[in-house]
Image: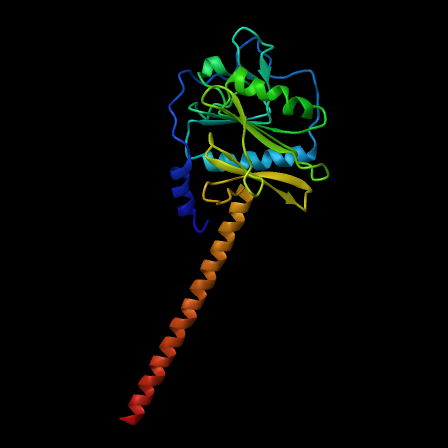
Length: 259
């Protein structure tokens, strides 16, 4: 995108419109654990992927204070049953306040469920992510869209998405010619690209017009580049102005000598 102003205009244009949820922000409810005893370590591939897409989504969705982005935390979806919970890598909830941060997300207390969930595949959870969780997220919890992605470049690409149909069924999202998937819930296109430096197959969001959503670091570099170009342009203008003044003085001297 050409300018920060363009980005702000596109934020307003493309972010979906939704009502405020009926509940209230809930940090923690006693009796519902916010941690488990299964110490499953995430790989560096997953860490880079999760941090990258969280940064991109956070920066893009920051314009609306009624959007909450959860990262690897419990979602409890049935009051009174603490076993009814999942902990997706990334989930986005519309209509609920961004702050305070939650230790867990309780759908009945907040009056909302995530509109989209993203899981990044690992050896220990890949089978469930591809099978059981599709129906769990879309039917049991009521999530609108669910995506899975394999971030390790050494493993075969595995990027799929499903959404709930108007009739309540589950439909797999058809990929476009580049293998990207369009999220109707987020109004964003998701597509992966190989990062040769980190060897991470990064899933990244794009606006409907194809504009990539940058990370904070990428945005910083764009600002620095824009500032550098601005300074170069100002220097050239100064040089031209000095040259014009020199020519004017030369012409004036020539006229005086002629007189």
